[in-house]
Length: 379
Image (cartoon, rainbow, N blue to C red):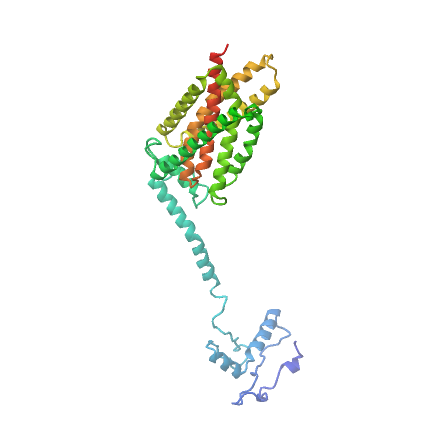
């Protein structure tokens, strides 16, 4: 607010009344005088005048309070407009260290990234990642470490067997032998009873139930007695499904059954030895081709059920199912053997599941070898 010229120009000899709140009688507002005309001054001079009027009128009690608070207060004295000065408190502010705080946070955020870069450089210099793809994460998983150890292994699979792997393989092969014995006993019992006249499709489909139950359970969630019973039920039903074929084979060529059992055992031992002599993990690369072969074999088997025997397609489908299946499941022995070792090293030590995989291979090879021996001796 700008008053008129007469009101804005006080008499220098007249003093303002003393402040009642000041104990020393110091005037509350400092005197001021104008040595020039405000009307002829510029807008900037008007604003400067108003600001100097505001900050120059400060009681001593407030200055003393600021001094007690530790602030460095400029002296505020009564004077002319030219001598009036602003009073600013130069004390600490909560905004003064913001820049330093931001710099510290940025430095802390950059420290782990720089350490990770240094670790990666050291690993590259040490040869950890030679011949392996760049990791997508700075925190390597257990699978990545396991694959790296596999690549660093030298020699054959036999040379890299640990004592734990050997003990696990003994348990698997013992379970497999027990399953083969249960299947043989079930076949003999079915041939000696009217159960041998049942279609092999019925026990074959029924065997899927304990097989799925065994695959979808583990030793941590279910008891070992339950899972062992599922394994025994699966092998027993599988042996029952072979009873009609064995009965025909014994009637046509009695020596075909023991010969087929001997040949199957020889193929099983040969492929197991080859997997032990191969490089660690070499047979695991056959997983995708073997899976594709199973699909082709399944399609050929289903098509052979609907194609008549007199059709020209039947011999082709029969050959694919017989010879292709024999080669496929023989290769699966080497694959399942190395996968069993790899699963154990990854922490999966379920011997029942591994024994089921090997039992399926053994049964498939035995059936096809028996067919070949029966075809050679039968006109």
